[in-house]
Image 1: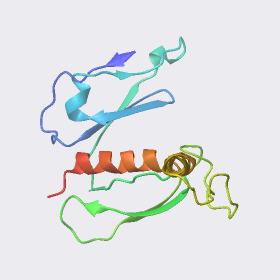
Image 2: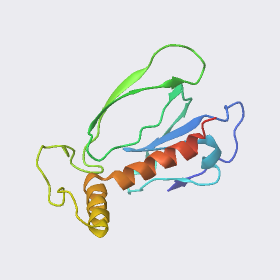
Image 3: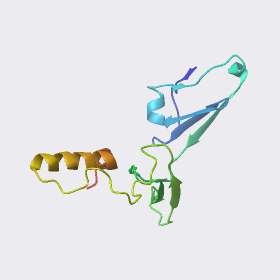
Length: 150
């Protein structure tokens, strides 16, 4: 089943539409649900179930760049209404980029000082791949491009 928002009145532009059908919930910004539908799996039993529709407004926002060797984060939020109420949240991420615990104190192969430039480049590449730094820096740059700080 696909649900499109055809029109709306009195709903703020930055609202988020949240629709639940059975045990499945889909959410998207209001501006996108008119163009791209919210898709739900349909079973024979669920056809007669009602939709639960919520209109949500963001009160705070932040971006978090995940690091492959980290699994716990403490993040602060920037209030969107300009209030100075501090907001924080703790997150535990499992099974995303790695198993965490990258700094287990063991020396890994290729960590010795290289003798030649080619060895240095290969050693650096191995280090970046082993610690997931390339993906981390790419995610960080992606977040900066999306935020576009002044």
